[in-house]
Image 1 (cartoon, rainbow, N blue to C red):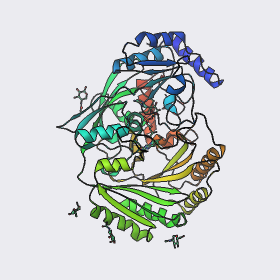
Image 2 (image 1 turned 30 degrees about the horizontal axis):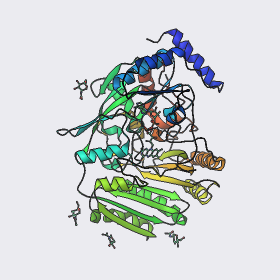
Image 3 (image 1 turned 45 degrees about the vertical axis):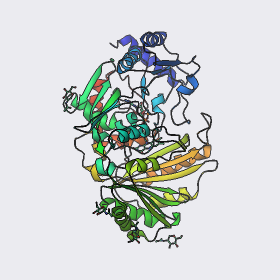
Image 4 (image 1 turned 90 degrees about the vertical axis):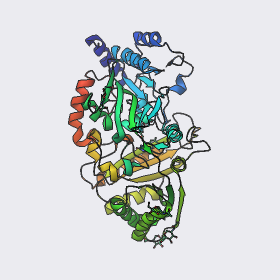
Length: 495
Ligand SMILES: Cc1cc2nc3c(=O)[nH]c(=O)nc-3n(C[C@H](O)[C@H](O)[C@H](O)COP(=O)(O)OP(=O)(O)OC[C@H]3O[C@@H](n4cnc5c(N)ncnc54)[C@H](O)[C@@H]3O)c2cc1C
Ligand SMILES: *[C@@H]1O[C@H](CO)[C@@H](O)[C@H](O)[C@H]1NC(C)=O
Ligand SMILES: *[C@@H]1O[C@H](CO)[C@@H](O)[C@H](O)[C@H]1NC(C)=O
Ligand SMILES: *[C@@H]1O[C@H](CO)[C@@H](O)[C@H](O)[C@H]1NC(C)=O
Ligand SMILES: *[C@@H]1O[C@H](CO)[C@@H](O)[C@H](O)[C@H]1NC(C)=O
């Protein structure tokens, strides 16, 4: 139980953080973690451990917070015991699945937290009768796709980056190449196990803890408890999957952006595209669940609206090849990805219900024509939404985003994967902040709306932008399942 004494300790810890000092971990808390560390695989890292400098880092090296401890449980019971140690001592808990949070929230987003790193929770099985996959929260998408392929071949609806974790990704939505056919990752979850702040394992599905089932699918990242396991609908991989690319010069941005939005509204559910608008042009990556003849017909519809592209190619293959192509592997495989991505990035985003206004398009063109000095790349990824995303099988907190037509991520990158933590690029950060501010000011789709998986600290009224009319109910569910706010970060669901 959390008594008022530990609650006061929690407030004291928070006060310390606001003074900008690294919070001193309560002795009882570390002793508690050492006491429960029973399995050989379980690791505990604290400020004095040799691996503390590396095991605290997530994907984005822009962030280098100092947690009180990083605990890597080997079993669900270990994870539950660790959560209880932290909650009883007033130490905030940050679950970490793949560590890809845009704001480093799986590292706490500030100093002094317990990171529960779920990497060892890699349970996997598929019920062949129902196609429901049981997936431990430690899986990353690339290895998971490879495992599903070897088992079925099956696929699940989720994102393209092979190092993203199934945990944070699915709890905040999860959009990928079969999104318009099968919905968001969160739409395909039929059950979960969640550890609450008391260290109790709750079964969560449509009939057991149904309010939590609604909340976690969309708003579950770090706000309610720690999810150890997902039960997700998987699908038989289709016989043919066609991938393709086509592009126009950046100078065509206005007509291309209009046509892309218009085409996205009527394109078949089988197609998914992301368009990278960058200093080198407007370039589309396409995935079509079907053969190249059918894919070509869809591409022709888009080309008709714009005019001849500067290049165009389609390649027929299977799902594994498509997932591999868009994973941008740097010599590795899906099962064992080697990442070419920069580890220093500032990403921001907005989602849209209407085509961009002339002003919004011009802002994009202005920033893409003037990339920051010292950066390695800048781009805006325009993803089409729609299809099955708008026809979910069951209600969830993600419903506030139904009807979105497309989303845009504004990315600025610098350094490379070998660079040191903390490496910064003031021009890149400045470019990103100004671009986002201008896009927010010009936003013409209604009240500001954005995708929570691209979480951004500076987003005005961010909780409303991320959760819209789901927010009030989310707060009441938060009160019920985490009344002492053990799971909290700068943008978590408040009490
Ligand atoms: C390079 C890159 C590519 C991306 N590509 C896509 C894409 O194609 N499609 C898309 O939709 N999104 C994409 N994203 C965004 C991604 O979905 C989010 O960043 C997501 O939150 C990452 O999940 P994670 O488990 O890797 O991150 P983490 O940083 O581990 O977690 C993110 C948040 O969820 C919480 N959390 C994590 N695991 C759990 C758990 N088991 N229980 C409770 N809370 C948990 C964390 O505490 C944190 O607040 C991408 C991000 C990056 C950096
Ligand atoms: C929900 O979970 C409970 C407890 O594990 C289980 O008995 C029940 O069959 C599940 N219901 C559904 C619809 O999956
Ligand atoms: C696209 O850009 C090219 C090169 O700048 C130009 O010649 C062409 O007319 C443009 N097409 C359209 C449809 O705007
Ligand atoms: C391609 O797919 C379409 C739609 O499924 C089908 O009608 C057609 O016969 C296929 N064509 C070839 C060449 O396989
Ligand atoms: C795609 O369609 C275009 C226009 O009809 C045609 O010229 C081209 O040969 C087709 N490509 C494929 C791969 O079918």
